[in-house]
Image 1 (cartoon, helix red, strand yellow):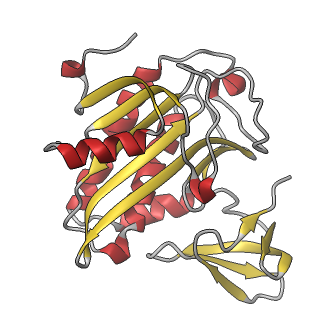
Image 2 (cartoon, rainbow, N blue to C red):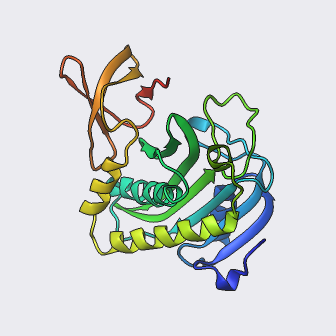
Amino acid sequence: MMPSPDLFPVPLIHISETNSTNNYLQTFCARESTEELTTVVADFQTSGRGQRGNSWESEPAKNLLFSFVLFPEFLEARRQFLISQIVSLAIKEELDTYTNDVSIKWPNDIYWKEKKICGILIENDLMGRNISQSIAGIGININQEAFRSPAPNPVSLYQITGKQYDIFEVLKNIMLRIQSYYSQLQKGDTSSIVTQYEKSLFRKEGIHRYKDVNGEFLARIVCVEPEGRLILEDERQIKRGYMFKEVEYLLK
């Protein structure tokens, strides 16, 4: 059941269908004065976008498809990865309350074991050296019972636990967590965010298979640098640094 927007912790816009909640919110923000953390949630997206131009499969009213806006003018563009970190941490920690084995696959996919339960797309607008607007679009598989697209490894909370969930209750809890993390960011308390993010990483421990332009290799995660660069160390103990889309995780 749809909650009353007046009782929701952030301004809420509920729509039945859109091509993309990110697009909808960008247009909304351009048209009128918009309060920070305003959230658009859709029952269905006709062309939800993900990283690498991928689409997001979702049955109508089964999953959580939403976007929200921040105006982090205090944050320099070179530190924009912090937004990705607080969003992915908020979602990971909410999903932790329903199941175990949830992690953040760099830069910001949310995984359960070796399967993807959530995708995040963050689009930042810059003004000078700082960020004027940040819109985060999120798709979380909640109640979908089966996936039919060729996506390699989707999973839903229902498939993991066998239970159905109130989508708006999950959304409310996520937005409360994002609110809390964003407040921390505004105060400049970033060290605990960075530490928590690294502790939450998929494949944080051990040697695993990866692939870059030169082919497959085995490596361990060393750290993620402040601008978001992933540092791996291969079997010859050579450090390798990658920005987004420059390295691929090879899954089981």
